[in-house]
Image (tube, rainbow, N blue to C red; front, side, top):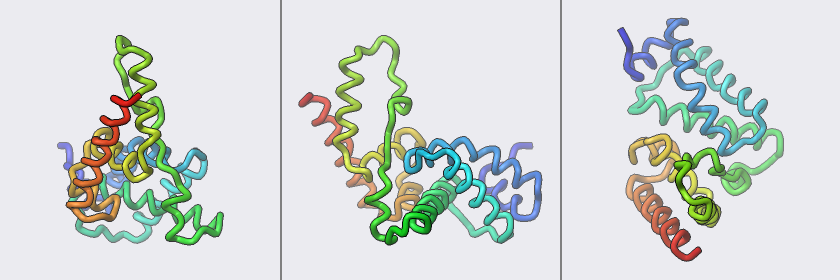
Length: 178
């Protein structure tokens, strides 16, 4: 019997096997998302491990709508705290200092696509703000709902919709102008 994410989340608070399954299920997703903020793989892996150590040691499982959104948000703040503590960056400056990067491997463009089109899209993506790149990644690549994005990015629902719309609009404009 396969447990849903929320059932696995609940079961993981006092069951090592469920906790291990939770870790194995989300480690690749967290690693991929974390690379958008932290290029140092060792630091990233440490942050993921610290996140799961904290979860296991606390033994508490808050009620969450989306396990994935909760873990992505928790990792994002683990990374922020790491840089805040090691770089002595003020908390409100962290968002600007840690760039969200969408790299070439995020765009799985069909081999038949023209190289010029790929370059146009990548150039257009580079013109987006960090927040716009992040919402594009969360919505299109991680397939999160707006409710989950709200939790990860800590913005309200309408702001998430507006930001996504603006990012898509900017991408279209960037692609057609290049």
